[in-house]
Every structure is written in structure tokens, then in C-alpha cells.
Image (cartoon, rainbow, N blue to C red):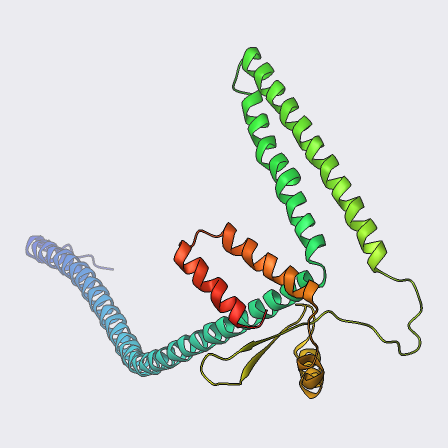
Length: 301
């Protein structure tokens, strides 16, 4: 078998392959760079799209919330105006009710005060002496104690021993005076009780009995109409108006019995002496006193 040896120059091919290799490397670098640029571009685009989506969603939500806020604000303004009107109406109603309440309160307070005062007067009229004694006891004994006890308490913490002794001595003196007054009031109470026992009766009142009431009957000749007399009746304070009217009517029906009642010389003399005594004890002028006595004698007494 024949062998042939050929020498082929591969330098151009090697140079070409080397050039292709360089181009391939450059292409690879370009592809890698392009890939990086594409990835960066896609990432930027995706981020931009996400930002746009977020911004749009935020804008949508914000616009919806703004719309709802606007609607709610409008409704709130309307309801607020309505509430203000209700408030004004309620305030006027409250003021009117307070005014009516205060007016009714004042009226009933005056009525209750009048009733309390009338009741207190009627209770005091039942037994004036007992009420007077009670008031005197309250004012003289208890009132003095209430006045001086705080003074003693304050003074005991602020003054020295000498002043305390002086205060104690004054208290003892006033206490002795109070005890004297108290004993006098006790004596007066006992005297009043004994007088009341003489006036009160323990007898039964199961059946109707007759009682006598003192009434002062007086008549004087009228200075305006001739042969005319003016009648005057004085009753005890504890009698009611109905009882006074009944007694007055009874006396008027029996007025002739009083007119026909002639006074004795002793009664006339006693009345004249008492009248002269009253004139003498008064500070009237002598001519006035003489004129009063002359008119008194002309009156038939």
C-alpha cells in the first residue's frame, strides 16, 4: 500500500478558528450582557407595573373613601343641624319647665309657709301661756348655753391658765344665774299648772253640757245720729268666727234686756271713780280733762 505524505499549511485555518473563537467569546459576552440587560429591563418593567398597579389601587381606594367620606360628612352635617334644632327645642322646653317648676314651687312654698304659720298660730292660741313659757325657757336657758359653750371650747385652747380661771368663774356665775332662772321658771310652771288645774275639769263629756263664755257687751250713744247707740262686742281670742257670729246674733236678739238694765248708784260711782283715775293718770291738758269729765257726766253715768 502506497503512502503519501502531504504537508498542509493549517495556519490560515488556525487563524480563522482563532478568529471564530474570539467572535464566539464576544458573542457569548454580548449574549450575557443582553441577558442581563433584558433581566434588568424586565425587572424594572415589572417594578414599574407593580408601582402603577399599587398607585392605581391606592387611587381607587382613596377616591372611594373620599366619596364615602363626602357622603358621610354631608349626612353628618344634615343630622348635626337636626340635632342642633332638637337641642334648641329641648333647651327651650327645659327652660320653660324650669320656669313653670320654679313658679309652682314658689306658689306652693308660700301656701305651705302660710299653712305652717297659720297652724303654728292656731297651736299657740290654744295655750298662749305655755307657748310663752316654752319660748322663754328656750331663749333664756338653752339659748344661753348654746351661745357660751362654743366660746368656752375655743377659749380653753387659746388662753392661759389665768384667763381660763376667769372664764370658769364667769361660767359658774352665769350657770348660777341660769339655775336661779330655771328655778323661777319651774315655780312659774308649777303655778301655771295649779292655775290650769283649777280651770280644768276631769268630768266626763259624754252628754251635752252648758258652758259659760265671757263676753263684754258695751254700747255708746252715737254722736252723729240722735237717740242712736253703737253696739260693741268683745270675745275671747280662742273662739271661732262661727261661734262669735252665733253669740252676736243671740245677744242682738236680746238687746232690749241689756238696754233696760239700770245701773245702781254703786256701779255708777265705781265707773266714775275709775274714769277719773284714768284721766288723772294720763298726761292730758287740764282743760281737755275737764271737757272729758263734762261729756262723761252728760252721758248719763
